[in-house]
Length: 422
Image (cartoon, rainbow, N blue to C red):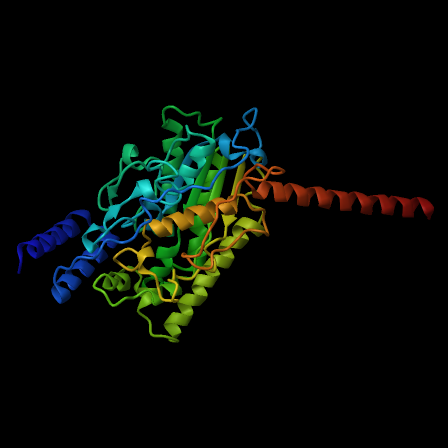
């Protein structure tokens, strides 16, 4: 056995004993299986999109509001002072710029689609880097890489409080962590500054569903989401919260280039990847995945539970709902969008997520776009001249309430006329 292999296995065993994290334990199990089967292999550098210049996003009006807005339906991108993000490994940016399997535990938080702040828009497209065009002084974005098996500092991660491997039952803890951190964060006004928070969680519940069908059920997912979102609504003033809809995880089964790294995929998401095609187990997980999507949409869009506060809005951003894996010009899976574990996204995928999220934020309810594949061309939208604000459910609800009030008034008037006439 070569020295490098000895070192890797020793590190695997050490980290597994010290950290005791389920995700890391699974990762290390996969690493040991790969090394024993294939030996220590290197992966070629992935094409990440770095080095190109992101030009062509020149909006006519990038000014903030003349005065700091007091209602959530009148917030322009230039009014946003704070960004934050909660979720799991897709938000921590795990492996996003990894060139081999050994770099998968690195969380590239500075490159994460919803919260990374590396450089500016010419370096990488992230939500904070787009917002920097409208407000160069926005704060909260991730600045540096972290390791998945070590606590991330505020200085490195910023307000990227996502946790690699997190399930929804752990989500209330993240919500509480965000609230407490914002209350004590120096240099901001907790009460007055507008915040944009992006949430993406639930995929790990589906990946673990067959291991505990009660804990990882749709009922459990919605319970913990409701608990967390209620907490944010009650305690966070001046906030717009993006909740990103889950994707169909069974599409992940298409991503397997027979490489060493793809063994990790079977460990990370065994309940989705391992069942045989057309098996009852696979059909069940597809149905549960659909329930997750439908129940989340009902909670946010239909229940009205989060529409009653003038300085808070919760918006479901659906761009991932129908997405398929990235493909090349010949229709084959484009592995440059996937990290060496065949599971997470490279910087190219993160940039697509960032653009799609931004566009959804400036599209009204009922007219939000969906990504067909990660590899399709996405052009950033400018806020419109007639509606330069981030779209929220608040505005939709206000219009609906106004319409309902008009109808009620008309009915009462007609009843009064009828009574007088009789």
